[in-house]
Structure formats: C-alpha cells, structure tokens
Length: 146
Image 1 (cartoon, rainbow, N blue to C red):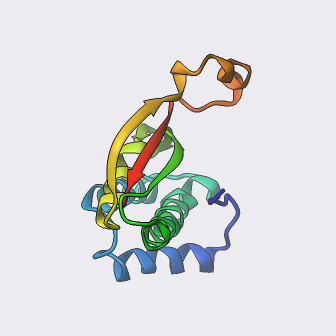
Image 2 (cartoon, rainbow, N blue to C red):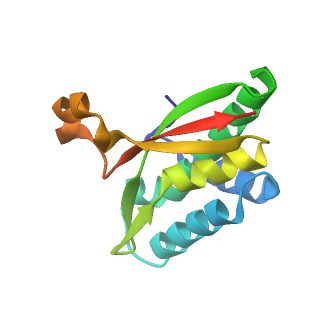
Image 3 (cartoon, rainbow, N blue to C red):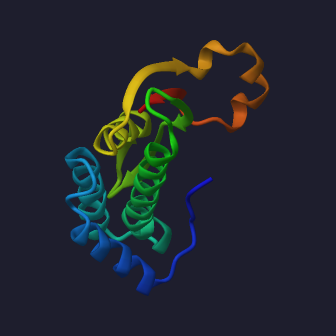
C-alpha cells in the first residue's frame, strides 16, 4: 500500500515543490487535479488535513509512477501485471472533487510504457460484498501488459 495521511508543513511544501520538479513524469490530468484541489483549499479556510490533500496526492501519484516504472522494468515482454485501484473523492474549498484514480493510474501506466489491456470492475465479484462498508465508490482491477 502506498499513501499516508500525516505530514508536516515542511513535507507538504516539499511534496508540492516536487510536483513542479516532476511535471514531465506525471500526466496532465494528474497535475491538473492536484492543482485544482490545492487552489480550492488555499482559497478557503480549511483545516490542516484538507490543506494537506494536494501534497499527499502528489506523493501518492509520484510513488505510484515509480512503482509502475519498476513493474515495466521487471515484466518480461508481453508479461502482465494486475493492480487493484479504487476511486475516491475529497471536499476541497467546500466543493466535492472526484478522484478517478483508475483512469489516472491508467494514464500513468501508459507513460511508464505499459498497456492497459482490460479493466475489471470489482463490483462484479460477489465475494467482495463483505467489504462493501469500507469500500470507496468503486474499485477496478487494471490489467497491465509490457
């Protein structure tokens, strides 16, 4: 699992600086989403957790970018890997903002040289019903191929 909720003010600034430095690595859709959330929260009186969302998303997507580059490196040609990704949302500046993580991750995978050959909705898997209360709005399995 990648992700964290607790960061310091210094880390928050460092992650947002890293977004600027790594603009070439992330898809435009990821950068635009992070910038939108950051601007909405910056322009409103929000608590420290909401203020950290854009920095935490930056860290998450940069880390996942590194993971997918490593998956590409380790896979044999025509080899496949499967990644379970859940959608989410946040409230930024009083506005609900959807985070279509599967789509964003598919774009990151493409930039890493992987092909998304299929997506499987986790809602189709009946055995997952026991986890329904803790699930996000939806989860998918991305099949990636080198």
